[in-house]
Length: 100
View (cartoon, rainbow, N blue to C red):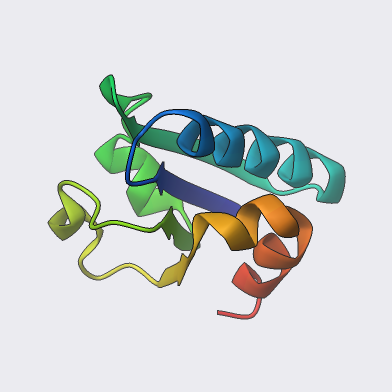
C-alpha cells in the first residue's frame, strides 16, 4: 500500500513535524510506503509530486487547518484526521487508511 500524507498545524512548528515523523515511523513498522509533505512555518517542505499522488492508494491529510493546494488531490481517496490523532496513535490512523 502507498500513502501520501500532508501534515499541518495552526502554528506550523512542532506538531507539523512531529506528526510527519510519527507517520514515517509507523509506516515502516507496518510495511506501508509513505511520502509526507509538511506545511509548516517554513512553507511547504517535501512537496508531493503529481506522480506520488497518482500512485497513492490514499491521501492522508493530518491537519487542524486547511491545507494549501488541496485541489491537486481531486479524484483521490482522501482520509482526514487531526494532528492529535496521529500523535496519539499513528499506527491506528494508517490502519484505517487501508480500509478506505
